[in-house]
Length: 335
Image (cartoon, rainbow, N blue to C red; front, side):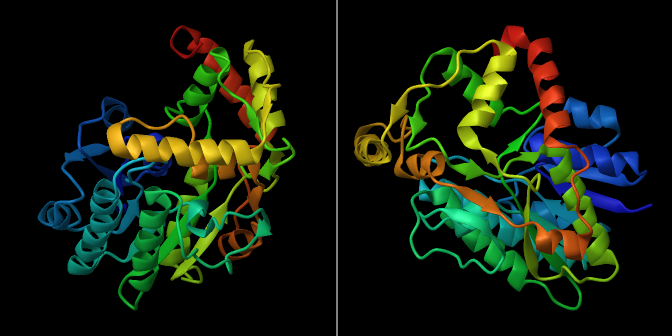
């Protein structure tokens, strides 16, 4: 039996990973700032602490066979000090703890935002470079963290980074509730021409990819020191996908359109206003969000299929059925 530690194991992706590790019969420790009843019910043990506390992580990782570092501060708005302390310093602490305790494997949950370069990305692969400038602190912090994780790969610690795009599925506390709320309130508008295609990633496929990476690092190590994009392997038209979901749950489709230039300029203005007098409140539009809503960004899965043997275990169609069922079962809180 392995002993596995998951930072952020009480979150959306972390919980999916925990479920799969418990199901295969291994011991799971979940690091988070709170106890999580759901993961404890599954059979995992919660270790309460902050990844910004290096000594805490050194104690937590003693005797651990693999670490999944999922915990992060996400979002498109926030101070650099917050993103740096959690995403960069926290990741440095995870690496240090792994090295201190001779943990064999470290799998890091990254993001495709690390290669976002403000242009359309069509079937991009892992050779895409990191950008020189950033429109949000989240992307900047994840680039630094991913770089450190991959650089830490050596003969004693095997590391790998996974970049899942637009994670969705039942239990999603982020993307889907936000879309539903804005759809119900009529606040969504298509940005640009509405023809942009994007990758999406069903949460169980993301968890599956993480476990494949762990298996690889424990055996052939062909993925050691590398990053991989994760998705359904079939990009969707962003606005068609949203409207299909809305139709199935009884929300009016998004039909209004705003030119990309208008949305981008509005985002720049709102960022300025909020940075001056409303720092703690996220703007309704930012330059990064305008780019994400208007541009195509999808990636090749050839590398992860070749090196990890990855194929989605849940199709987009089946995932949508599960998602819609979950939304309808929880319509009192979601709709």
